[in-house]
Length: 378
Ligand SMILES: *[C@@H]1O[C@H](CO)[C@@H](O)[C@H](O)[C@H]1NC(C)=O
Ligand SMILES: *[C@@H]1O[C@H](CO)[C@@H](O)[C@H](O)[C@H]1NC(C)=O
Ligand SMILES: *[C@@H]1O[C@H](CO)[C@@H](O)[C@H](O)[C@H]1NC(C)=O
Ligand SMILES: *[C@@H]1O[C@H](CO)[C@@H](O)[C@H](O)[C@H]1NC(C)=O
Image (tube, rainbow, N blue to C red; front, side):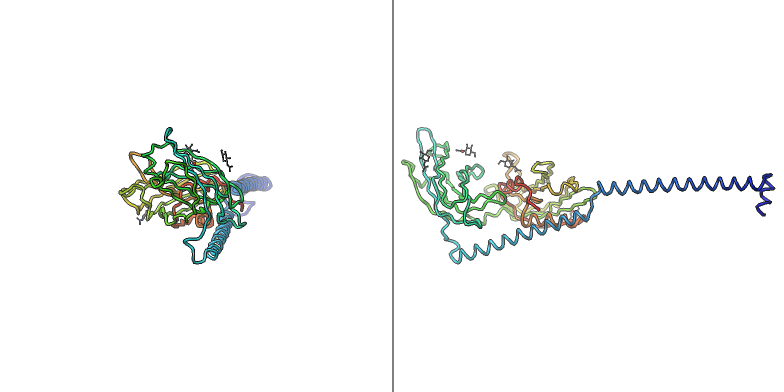
């Protein structure tokens, strides 16, 4: 059938049919164009939204690499310090002269007050690279390790004069069971404070009938005061902004109760800009110093918050009656150093992969410092 036949059968002129066909063609073409432009717009919108909100996995990885470099630098600095120490200490490591301290003890029977005066230190060893320290003294009345008093920090000196008195209200019988400990520290605004040396005074061996003023050589601080180790994995998914933590296990935890074993659980806190946002806990494991958890938890961490986030993992000895004691803690994140920073960096550099590491637990006092320190410059 030819075109003319069709036109004839529909009782129309061929011109009329042609114009109808052209009109339909134009309509279809317009619909097509309309649809295409809409598609394109949506596409562009999608893309721009992706650029604005969706995290760019590549830049997250780059950030991780930058952290890794910083962790490497920290570790190298630590190592060179260690070797420098090793050289200066030589073979007389144990009995190296660390400096001396002058203190005064004065017991007032009428008021049951023990006045402890830290007068001064002389010839402290220099821990800072510059050959000067920023010393201060911390005082404990053992066995209570929680309460402490501190002198002011004296800047850039190895012969600080403190002349500060601390008063303890204690009956004479109570004093007989106490040990006074004075620890000289080198203050450091950013990293953990290094201990220069310490002395211990067993008060039942001291004649408190009169005021005493004594010079004592500082002793090496007890190391081997191990708190234990913890293993956990962390995983970050930038597209969902999810940080997952799996607490795996802990080992060689320090005994908190005399005699009995501990009942440890693990508390995980997320900090942003020094503020605590979220806290989650594992279950309590009964009577063990080597608990196994394998418990997972997750936190919201949008990718633009990576640079101000810290993750604190704390092992706590659960106590149903008294209040629970912190055994030790680890802080990961931008304020961290060494192995802790490296763990965080590895996670950021490898999105979606769980990364597990062991960490040595630290004294919570030191961790607090890390959390409040300003973020390390990149
Ligand atoms: C130490 O402080 C006491 C009282 O605060 C003061 O009388 C004394 O002179 C001070 N000694 C030194 C060496 O500064
Ligand atoms: C010593 O520390 C305790 C708390 O640990 C505090 O209550 C007390 O006021 C401090 N004493 C001095 C003299 O600073
Ligand atoms: C740890 O937990 C995960 C998920 O709950 C499980 O698949 C895995 O088998 C567990 N591992 C061990 C060693 O129990
Ligand atoms: C830091 O120490 C202060 C006082 O010593 C305490 O009130 C605070 O809760 C500690 N913060 C953390 C995160 O442990």
